[in-house]
Image (cartoon, rainbow, N blue to C red; front, side, top):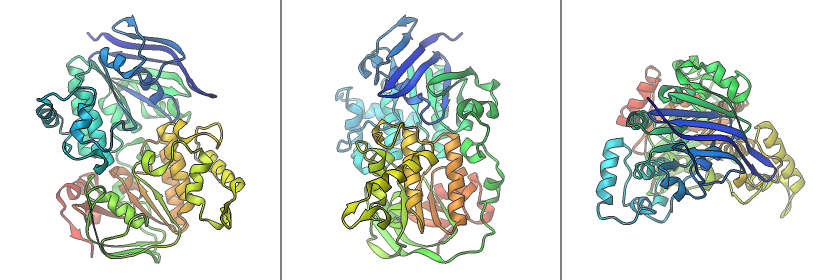
Length: 498
C-alpha cells in the first residue's frame, strides 16, 4: 500500500502584485507518478520550486514523511530526499558536463563511471567532456535529469522535462519514471501534452490561477474534463493536446492542396560546421510564400544551424543564401536567445521591432508605439502579466514563450523561422499558435517549422523534411506518419533534397 511521502496544503506565494499561488494543494504518494497540469501562469513551476527549496511560501504547510518541514534552500530539499529537475536550466555554461554533475556532490574518483552506468540504464546519453555552452537544449535537459537521478531521490520532481526530448527519448524517460515509482519513490511530472501525462501518471492534479481545481486518479479522467479544468474551455486542437490520429496528422498537412507561391527564401549548397550549433552538408532548399515547410530531426543533426542560417542570424561557410527583408525568428531557447530577463515586455518587443520605420524617428525610438505593440501582444497572446512594464524574468516559462512567439509573428511578414514554437505552452496557447501559423500561411507568409514534436510537424506542414547528420531528406507522402518520419530521423534514409 502506498504511503504519503509529501503533502502541500494551502500554499500561497506572491511576486509583487502577482498572486502566483492562492491556496494550492498537492499530495505525493510512494509508488506513484503524479501528473501536474495547468495553463501557463497557473502556478505549477512556483509550487514545485517551493517543494524543491527554490522558493519559500508566503503561507501554507509543507509536510514530508508526515512531519512539517521548512525548505529554505535546495540543500534542505535534498536532505529530505527531494530532487527537482528545473524547467529553466541551472547549468554553468563554461564547465563540462561532468563538472556540472559534480557540483554539489564533490569530485569523487568513481563519478565518471557512476554517470556512465546511469546513462546506460536510462538511455540519456550526453558527452561528458564537452562544455555545456557547446551543447543544445536537448543535451542540457538530459544533464539536468541525470544530475537529479544521481542524488537517488525519494521524491523526483520534473518540470517540463519532455519539451526538448525526442519521442524515443520521451518513451525511455517514461519507462524509467515507472520503474522509479515501482521502487517505492514518488514522481511528480509537469507536462502540457495530455497523452504524455495520461500514459504514465497514476494520479493527476490540475492548477488554475494558483489554486488546485481538480485532483484524482488518472485513469478516471477524460480529456474534455481535464481541458475544462485547465483552461475553462474544451477548445483545443489535437496537436496541442498531444492526441494522436487527427485528420491533419494522418494526411500529411492541412495546406497540401494550395497552389505553390513564389520562392521567398533559397539555400543552395549551404554548408556549416560549428560545434555549438551543428553542421549542415550541402543543403538545397526553396521556401515559398504561403507554405509551411516542416523539418523534423533528432537534436544535434543541424537543426539550430539551419534555423540560424534561414533567419539570417548566421552566414554559411559554403553555398549561397537568399532571404527576404522581413524575417521573424522563434529560437529554440527563449531564456538565452529570445528574451532579456531584466528588460520589461516593451523593451523585449523593441529588440525585434526597433528597425521598423513605424517604431523609430531617425535614431530615436517611438516608445509610445512600442509599448502599444507590446500591449497588443500581451492581450492577443494572453500573456499573464499585469502590464508591459513587467520584467520578462518575472514571467512563467510559458508566458515568456508567448511573448517571443507574438513578437516574432509580428516581425515575420515575409518569412518566419520557428524552432519548437509551442514549447512550454499550455493546450489553449499551443492551439492558438497553430491557428496563427495557418493564418500567416494563408496570407502568403513563408514558414519554416523546425520541431521535435512530430505531431506538430505532420499536422501543420505542406512539405515535410527530415534532417539527419546535417542533410535534408524529403519525406514522401506515403511515409508521413510518426513511424515513417521517425525512421528517417534516426536512419537518414530517403531522397536527398535536390
